[in-house]
Length: 379
Image 1 (spheres, rainbow, N blue to C red):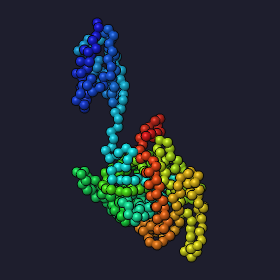
Image 2 (image 1 turned 180 degrees about the vertical axis):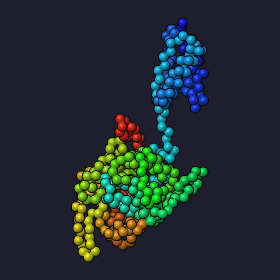
Image 3 (image 1 turned 90 degrees about the vertical axis):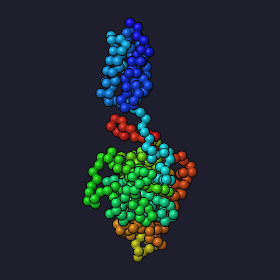
C-alpha cells in the first residue's frame, strides 16, 4: 500500500501539544515526514529531554498513524531535543547597565583579610562626598561585613511598592544605599548555602530592590574566584573591576589570579586597576617615617607587570580599623591623611571608569553552562 504524506500530516494535526494549545504540526514539532510504500518516517523536535515526554510523543505518533491512516504501517519516529532560548531577564538589557544604574564596579580580592570591604566602604562614602549617587551590594554571602561598616547592622529593609510591584528599599547611611544578606540573618547565624541558593539570594538583592538612580553601584565580592563571582557576572553587566591587595607576596599571588579571572577571554570584564591596602605604617610620633611592614610597593609593581592602572595606596592606620568597627568609614574624617588617600584613589577610579566607557563597548553578561561536571563561561 502507498501511504500519502498529506494523510500523515492530517493525522498528526489531531495530536495536541501539552500547554501550547496547538497541534503537533502547527507548533513546529513535526520537522519532516517521509513515506516509502507502507513505511513512514517522522522527524520530531521536542523542547524537553525528559524520557517520558519523548516516549509519549513516539507512542502518540505511531498510534494515530495506525488508527487514522493505515493500521499495518511501519512507523519510525526520530526525536531531536532542542531547548528553547532562555527567557531574558526583564531587568537586564544585555551589554548595558540595568535601568537607573550607570556604572557597576566590582571590588575583588584574591584572598581574604586584605581589607576589600574596608576599601569598598570608603570608596562609596568618598564617591558620595563628591556628589555621586552611590549604592553598595554586599555580595560576600558567607561573611557580610558592610552592614557593620555602615552602622546599620540592626536595620531591616522595608518593602515598598514600585510600579505595582513589591520591592526592597535599601538601607541608607552617609548618602550610600546598602543591601546585604547580613540584614536577613542573625549575628551568630552562619550562612550554610550551596552555590545555587546563594546565587538566588543575590539575584533577589539585585533585582527585587528599589535601587533608584545610581551613578555607581559598588559590589563587594567575596575573596577568591568562585561561584559567587560567576553568578554576579552572569546576572549583571559589570562596567569594570577593582582588585585590592596588600603588598606581601602571598597576597599578590592571589591578586594576580583575581585579575586573570576578569581578563579570561569569555568573561572579559575590564580591570580598572589595583589598590594597595596596608601599604606602609607611619607612627604618630614619627610622621615623616614610613615602615613597610608587609613589603614595599608590591601591588604597584604587580600593576605594572600586568599592565593595569595602579589606583593608589592606603596606609596602615589604626583609625581605619577603628572607624570600620564603629560603623563610620574613615574617609568621612576631614583633613586627614586617610581622607586624602581615599580621595586620590576614588578620583582615579572615576577617571578609569570614564576612560573605559569612552574606549570600550559595554560589558555583556556571561552565560554559564555545565560540561563534564565543571563550569564553563561564554558570552
